[in-house]
Image (tube, rainbow, N blue to C red; front, side):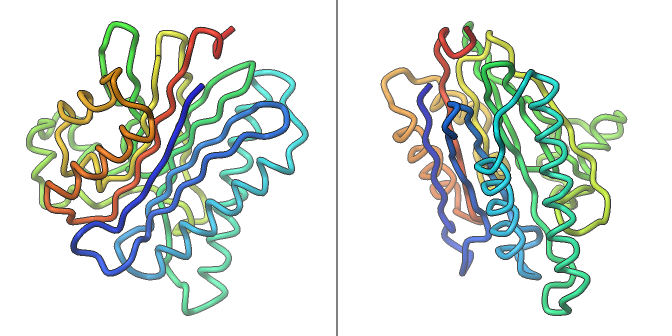
Length: 249
């Protein structure tokens, strides 16, 4: 397994409210997380930093996984507890009221490979046949409109409320967590904030992730560069994880 991640504040923002982590534990389990502070204000950078820090600690304190169900239960509980930590700080310290962050995570164990999603950061999968598509479904207002057939995907891309999310870490006492299993037909996973997928076409993203001539580090750099060439209107974060056949043995 090969992987890399990177982040950039872009060309218009004064600070970077995105945060990410890449971790392997002593058992060889792997955790990748991308967070994007909500709304560009209200201490989104604190929420994303707290979320990543909580997930890192829970992962490194964990004593391993017994099976696939145990891995998913750990991921579910860890995200729920992290939400409570961020939420309680927001309601007990006025300075941090309303802070929140998205979260998209990849957990790889010898039993299963999982994606977890809260918000509109996104996971994509690259298949052996070259097919590249989103794995996760955004928790956003326009995503609901698309799912109900009220607007098209093309209309969603330019909708004035496309940045309105319906689910996030820290803003609400309870959250929805979507889980997706990554099957052996997937050769690479991309995790990214909306600073990438909102401004760079899926076609260009796919061409970068597919390219066998670049390492994960080079792919991450090219993805971030593409977002900045598109205007750099937001913070941008990307993680590329590539799998071999042995990773699913």
